Image 1 (tube, rainbow, N blue to C red):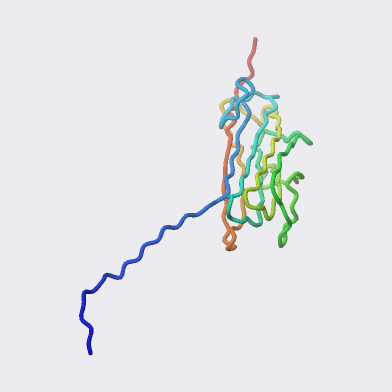
Image 2 (cartoon, helix red, strand yellow):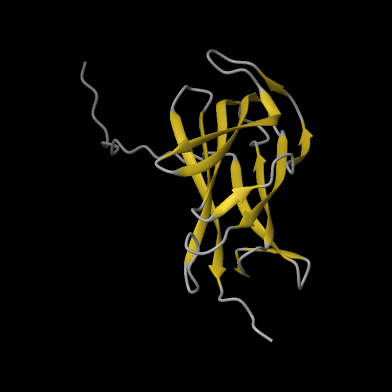
Length: 178
């Protein structure tokens, strides 16, 4: 016996949604009291930067490392890091969790602070506020617009690597003479 009938097309459709952690960086505008993307800065000013991380609510994140690179002409104010940490942060292969203990380093002349969040629980949040001082001339020139950027790197539940970046701008100004 044979079968006869109508052919149906071979079509498939799928919707894929991915969830990533979020990462952001802002600078405090002291005149408005708001966290913004850019502020003017004068030699001698101390600026406050905020880095925030939020894990996806339903996906594990592994090997999370956050680095904050200070621009040339700025110096980290030692001991100024303040943290708000919620959720689980555990060690992973080659990564010891230290979400409230930044280490300092240099890369190509830039100073950075690094936090090892390592394996973060679903829905975990992390925030760090740090201060940096604008150095004297000749390191800082009026009119420079300098990006102060942060970088997050990590792995998803399947072990695929990813990175996110965020920045806050500092617009260096000439001293105000009265």
